[in-house]
Length: 176
Image (cartoon, rainbow, N blue to C red):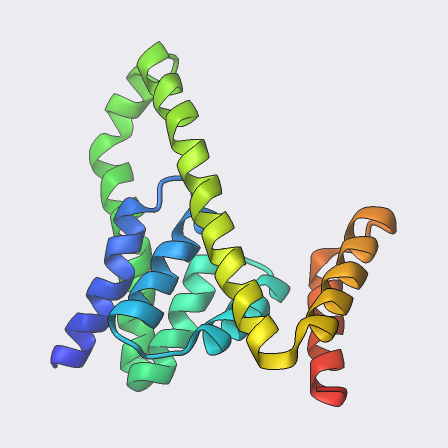
């Protein structure tokens, strides 16, 4: 029973603190799953993130379902998904009237401006950890090659990120 409580807490906390949706929650989920509970390594988490990004739908719930299943089976997946959506669901029900009333408030707009740089820093730190783990795992040349090709495909040729992720997964499966 304590395992399911830990799964709930691991996904409920990022759900509460992840203001801005899935991208803001990912570093928080990574902290809980990799650092705090040590259910996965950074490499395993990055693979789950890549897989989640290649599938349609909200990233946080897909990751919660997969990680919850890996840690606690089907009940773990259910608990993780409920913990991920519960904060938003509860807050939206309780605060719908207040949010609607003050949506044009300068204070609310200012809050959003203050939160964006924090989210950018958290995502940057997570990307740095992924880079370091990749460098240590496959070496600088493979890492540089994958970064360079991914950048060209995304920015120059405007290939959808899901296809780039699938391509890197295939490359990793056959070459690495």
